[in-house]
Length: 127
Length: 127
DNA sequence: TACAAATAGATGTATGTACATCTATTATTC
DNA sequence: GAATAATAGATGTACATACATCTATTTGTA
Image (cartoon, rainbow over all chains, first blue to last red; front, side, top):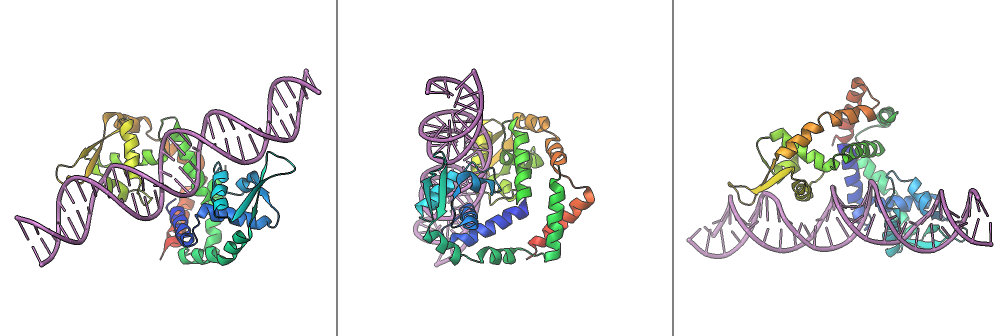
């Protein structure tokens, strides 16, 4: 948990220059995965680590920054669909490779050891 | 980070029955380590994972629940000293072994693999 | 078809983190 | 010894999570 905390802090620090939180950036990247299609809130939530009760409010903040656009689904009016704006796309291009760079900065393991770590964490979570 | 999230959630869920958050419980256990001596806020903060800007407010909540008592240090009036109340001690006795139990419930690794995991995480954080 | 149940997401509250700032006190320095 | 700097902790704000609840809409059922 200490390591997770350090990684998260490092990422948050790296994103500060762009006025984004780690959570906001994560949502942008999730949206990028589907772009130019839009996604509904539930789709986004299902791709985050956390239980995601907060996605609407993260979208609020991205919307204020004009990085995403929210509208009501035509198919199901209960659904809110979200799509990246051009500014959002530009932000992702500007910060391209940032996460990789941050990862390299903070991670002292080679690929083989990362595999081992990943495997151990998988086993940790087994039932 | 996903594993850390699951562990934290499991601990939080387990503590819910006692009306405590994981962070509050952590502070109680830190205080227990020094009891019956008291600790100042900085001492507590230095033993938590996080950067600890929030310790005074966590203590606020423990104080409302009468699990700790806060007073001004006689030696240095800037310092606030915190000590467990009898109710706090009772709470820790009641929840004795809880964390071990929660750990066993959620962790699928034996001691040897936990050692490996620990070692890999140490190496992850190297420089 | 009308009504009940389920679903999507928004929103309120309590709690926590990050960061800046404020007050009180202590330490330093001239 | 008085002025300044440093320190301890409290507090305000922005943002995040957890959970409960609310509204609008859709689905299911009698």
